[in-house]
Image 1 (cartoon, rainbow, N blue to C red):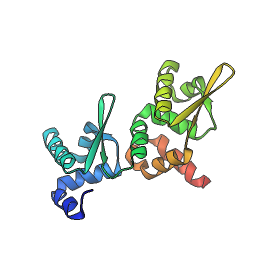
Image 2 (tube, rainbow, N blue to C red):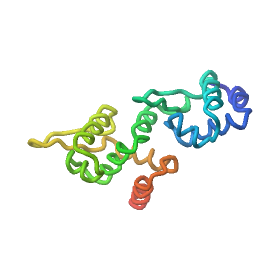
Image 3 (cartoon, one colour):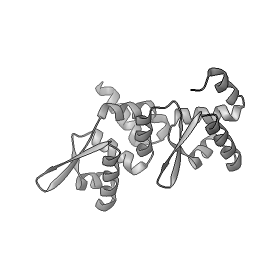
Image 4 (tube, helix red, strand yellow):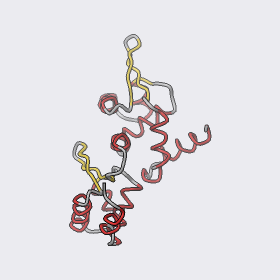
Amino acid sequence: MISVDELEGALQLDIRKKIYGTIKKNPGLHFRELQRRVGIATGALQYHLDFLQKKHLLKTERETKFLRYYLVRQEFGEMDLMAVLRQESMRRIVVFLMQRRFANNSAISREISLSPSTTSWHLEKLVEANVLEKSRRGRKTYFKVVDKQRVADVLVNYRRSFLDEVVNNFVEIWEEEI
């Protein structure tokens, strides 16, 4: 674990503070999105990210073609959830299911305007990530959110980082019900 003095030393530069703060507020950002939000050149951002990783302040997780950035102190379960919620289609599926007890592939694909095969692929990834669980009833398979409170907490805590009207609408409804 890094000491407070080491943390302050590593974050002496304003740009490093900005990078660290951006990742803290928006865990799971990939490089290009982080670059857009921080507003610095590719080489400079890569240099500072490498520095922060060597100081054990940041860690990365590879997710398909993206490398996502998290604080070392972030909980692992939250990182996994953020990784799937950072993907728009998966986020839309999860938010849709948060508002229902369960739904099947065809209802989900209709609601979020994706083909059934693409929806099926996303659903399987969400089941593998333990965000959703599936159950069979007759010939149909239904999906539901495993831990709605955990998902809601992440969506509420990081809603500003998603820049998504779907998340904002969900958070408003969720907070009214509490």
